[in-house]
Length: 195
Image (tube, rainbow, N blue to C red; front, side):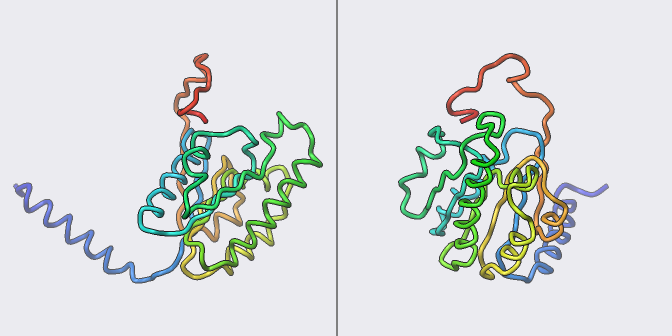
């Protein structure tokens, strides 16, 4: 029977081999998708980690409206972060497709500039996937800009569903599941948890 130390030494050998095989240095495209809570929170947590390493970051919120969320209040004045609230809220709130498309186009105009700017280390495109679900933006120019961005630039895109063409070029995809949610049990959304 193997001892704990022998098991851990064998495990370390396997992990060391994997680490040695990872020899590329480049930015990555990360998609955070699924029906569960925590996609934006995960992206912003990664951004906090990047800022901790002195990286320059930008956030574009494609859907969230003008309500001041806790994350906006916390990060908005940080010198390493450019924060852009570009949406007008969820489509069932706005009920104005023309306005939503115009907001999406403005957000994409800014996003495309950021994707060409090598001074940004991490870009977070929060709830961008809805732009494709509702046909507010064409996907082809986004794929092209993501594919041609600066070599070391990292990008995170959040949203429930991702187009397959976006998934094909992604480096990492995380699925956030929904097993249970307080809202369905009648608990109101609260500051610090949902916004």
